[in-house]
Image (cartoon, rainbow, N blue to C red; front, top):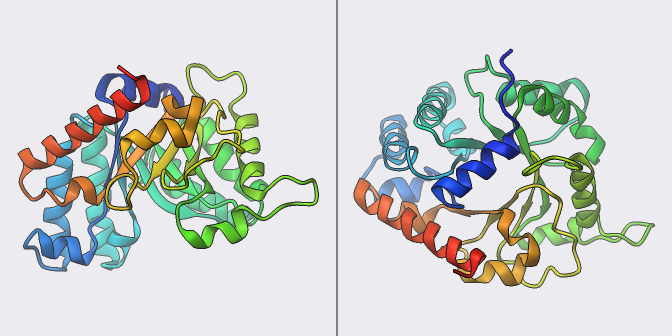
Length: 281
């Protein structure tokens, strides 16, 4: 297996060169309809190819949501495989949004599906759920280190229901979300210029000053655009860790399709707004 340069280093370079933005590839039925496409495999393929064509040579990260492909069965997964291959070939980093989480050999199999180089769905990073215990992610952590890929662990998510788990206080007085951040900080100790083990932290959550977000790793931040957060909110929400935030925009960009130029212009605007908000320049 070819070992890539660590994901964190590749991500830092991509954000510095292309701007700090992640664009989701979320072909849900309503968006296909807005594009004038049928909710079928042909519509899925047209949508995905258009997004990759418009974005993959200029944005830092593309993040396909696997569920919207899986709902079409094997033909949908084949479209996903092709989208990942073409996006990476054009220079974008691909974060597979699959939110996998299990124990033992099952977790190892999930990791191999997305983080092993010879897999048809090989991606640069994978979103994972730690709520069977952070230790349940060990097979994915080990394979990510071995292959030079990364993980984004659900820590402080933007959905309201997440709080009942993530804000729960443990016997040691620390919340579950804070515990996940601490685990990730430990994974990233000594890594330069950025660790490969990131957290998912919602940009819509407001003041997070009580949490230690500086984990020396990336913070994938959903919520920019249609969910109500703006690039200007990032310094307030993330504080000193804002430079390592990877804002995720989906509908805010995708609603400008299927016109390729309009998609590119929307992504460029978001990337520049994030750059200005984070750098202050």
